[in-house]
Structures are given as C-alpha cells and as structure tokens.
Length: 137
Image 1 (cartoon, rainbow, N blue to C red):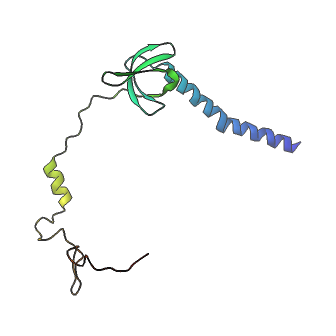
Image 2: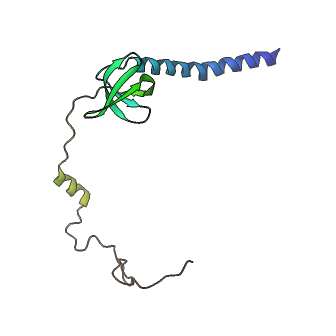
Image 3: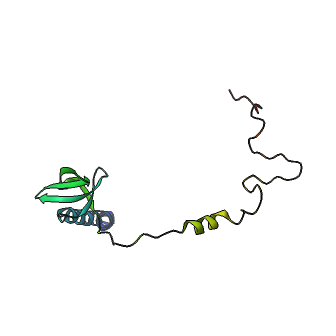
C-alpha cells in the first residue's frame, strides 16, 4: 500500500514540476505566434529576422530585407520580438577611449616591446628566424 502511495506522489510531483510548466510554455508560444500581426518583428525558425507585412489566417508574408519578402506559415515563426525603444545609441569619444586603453605607456620609449631583464635577450622575432628549436616529426 505504501509503495502505491509513493508512486502516486511521485507522479503528482513529476506533473507539477515538469509537464504542467511545459504545457504553459507551449500555450504562451502559441498565443504569441497567433498574435503576430502586420508590422511585428519576428524571428523565424530558420534564424532569420524580419517584419510581418501581410497576415491572412495561417499564412504570413515576412520582409527579411528591403524588397525581399518570404511567404510562410505561422508555424515558421519562432518568436515575436518586442518593439525596440527609440533610444539614441551611446556615443563613444574615440580620444577618451584611446587614452583609457593606452594605460599611460605612451611616454615610455619602446613600450610595445617586452620587458627585458639583465642578461636576457628580448623575444621580438628580429633574429634567429633560421634557428630550429627541435624537429617534431
């Protein structure tokens, strides 16, 4: 009797944790796709972004480039994208960015070469091109 109770509880937990949320996601996806109308930006199942220009029943026409329209079924829509906010993009000052990335090494002569300690030879690729360290065949 206790085994039967454990199995029933396990099935209930599996339904609550796995099956029910999956069905809810499927319903939300279906409502989103059915609600796609003219002017909505969409992502197709093939990974192509476009804008719906015509919608009749199960058929839609998606413009994927200026003057290039694709006829498809609603099942070919993977997602309806939210409308973009018309915000100005961040403007980056190139001089400030260059100053930030230089790290203050502009005043050091040869700052682009590696640091050399006493008695060591710098590794710059200027010499020893014909020297072979070892043949690894």
